[in-house]
Length: 232
Image 1: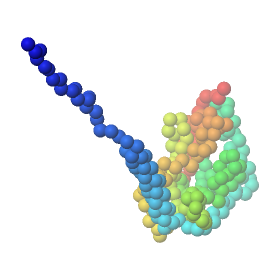
Image 2: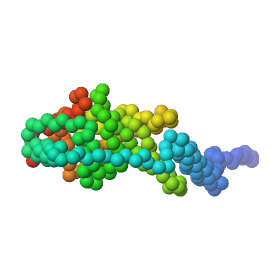
Image 3: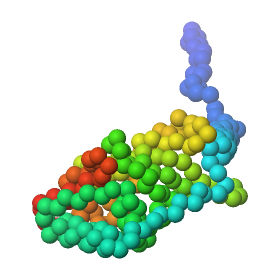
Image 4: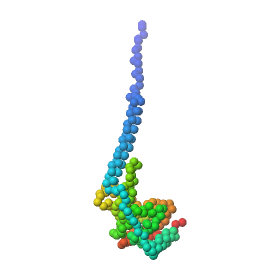
């Protein structure tokens, strides 16, 4: 008797996912490259549009802001008070110093480049009132690398003096450009500007500036007080 014959069905190969060839990887790479190129192009376009908007309320030439110095003996008195104030900061002594607009302009005029000298020709105090320092400005504006010529922000600002976390700040709270409208986005960007940031963050003067205990307006004067402790 013949043995039964069994037929075996071949086992199908294991199912595999879709094959991703070289073309798929190239598509991802090309897509990523196109995205970054588009992002860079958009950033450049946005920068150029904003630059065009800035040109609408800035000028090709700065306003001439001549700062007058005090005549002797007033100039000698103010410079002597400055030296006394700095000594008080270094020695941890109490000292209150009051300055009007003319005295502030004189100190700006005699400042060295290491102090506030960079603001010469860019800022002039006009008056002190209503808890603010009022000033005229002629600030240079940074341009895009390929743009020719210069632009200057010629206008008026109000400055709020205050102490924030032991850090003296002269904060720009208001910006006006006569006969021109300044966009809100520029106002918001400019409103965080601190006129003394570079000086207060200087390692050589960092400790001294943090010994200024009070910075405020009283009437038509700026009041600056030294704190009663000593820098070691």
